[in-house]
Length: 403
Image 1 (cartoon, one colour):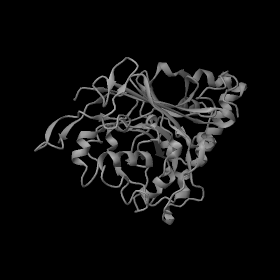
Image 2 (cartoon, rainbow, N blue to C red; image 1 turned 30 degrees about the vertical axis):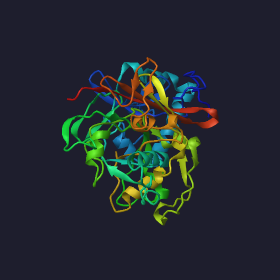
Image 3 (tube, one colour; image 1 turned 45 degrees about the vertical axis):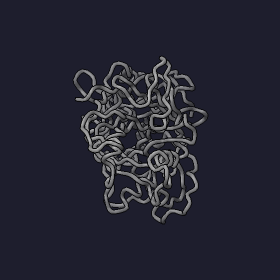
Image 4 (cartoon, helix red, strand yellow; image 1 turned 135 degrees about the vertical axis):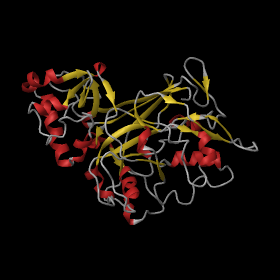
């Protein structure tokens, strides 16, 4: 399958060709719809289904989010995807389809799905090791449980926002190591975490087996889990992240279907010691997703997702193994993606080594943590079929003064 769609005449290196077809929700003229991206345009899925061009069992009709379609399950996802490829590749469909295409620049992109629950993991060994060295310089970098289970925490679904939404600087308690007591105020050490998130489509009535990942997970998005490091450092013991994490989580507006990532599958890393049986997969694999992080327009990091120690399938299995069911719209994120090199780290606390190594941006300014007015953009691509690239778009946010 070529990256170019026949009658649309897209370039072979188009990251949003028929090999991708990410889903979205968008607003226009006071209405909201669901869509699928092809090149720099969006196909209105409600219009396409309403006119009989595709059959999604009514999943797009009258829907402002993708939740109904995501809950329909893999047979429907596959049928719709195959039909979309046909509609956007075959010239005989041009007359019927072209009037339903809208320029991306002419719409307002919305949160593509209603978030049910949000879980954030901590699955990069390099990231966990870096933070361990920063916070526990005299102890072991990895805590004893880290290689036995995917460490994570439950976040706040209500503060997940779509790319482009502002990020007001959070307030809370902070305590300097040598201070006699905590103080209250805006975070002075605001940070990012570049992550990949996975969206549950089909719910479960309990635990999801590690090999059932594809039956439940609909697709992937980019995530920026904004983090207030000074708030986090004071509050996280003994129960973990709270206000330092729950104020904003930004996601990209495009949900890349898992089927578009088949060519990006790579063997998962060797896991030693051996994991417990419920975490063992018939095919232990991750995804070769290449991430880039821009700070005020300057490329500062290229985190590689392929090296994540815990895979998305293992994460889903672990977060449901206690009997907690998965729900349509559940979002779970990988945790910060970091590689072994300084310019492969997915957080600024690592990139600047907790502020000890300031970064110089293209405009000559230096930064350790985020200032008001700073903008962060995270983008990513992955290998597609026949040498193509699958685009994730970007997730952006600009820091504003406290609300």
